[in-house]
Image (cartoon, rainbow, N blue to C red):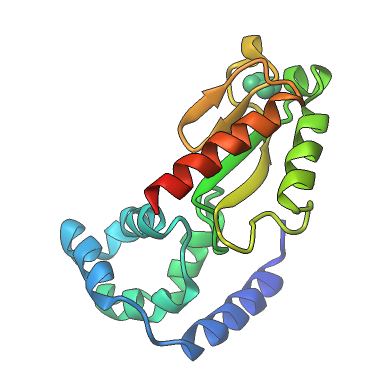
Length: 181
Ligand code: FES
């Protein structure tokens, strides 16, 4: 776990970067804030609403949220970094999670992960495609060990996945994505 000073430095750096950009959709953020009210105790719910809309928490929103809720940017940053479900990095339209818990690992989840990364030109460091269509992540256990190996794409669960299935899964997602454009 990062020390207090490290966390503080990170927070300051983050806030400095965030304050450099000031063009974003105030209206969309206001709608989310208005849904809950401006009570500081709703920070987490408001961040959740923002993440649902944008699939991550854009750092340039923080000064504005801070002003509207009268909560320090550092507090918002603490909430945003404390909970694993929040992401400060842009994510793809399709978030693919490969389970690498014990049950999935022994049933060869890593080759599935590697195939996804190869086909999408991603790596352990680069998790999201440049067109923001796909994000590939690992999770430790999705609670469906009997169906291992398991992969989820947003809210859809794929069970007993084989490396050979990856091509078809990606082709379907690309087709749906193109159809929606
Ligand atoms: S280990 Fe993958 S679902 Fe539990």
